[in-house]
Length: 94
Image (cartoon, rainbow, N blue to C red; front, top):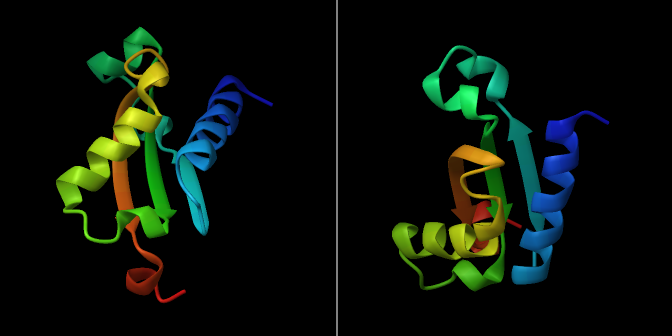
């Protein structure tokens, strides 16, 4: 398991503690940003798709804030950039 796979496992653990996750996909997109100034610090670039009922009634900004709060201990050291898609089960069609 490489370092970003280990990081992803920790991210998943923290997100599952914070939300009743129905779907969770975390993709490491760090390779797409090689040479980027942020990549030099060791933090990775990740794409997150999460489906959880806790997002019901929340604006996109509030959903992102909730995710950032759940992942706070990883930002900015392990997570340099995060692309987020946060949906309710209804929005996801589940």
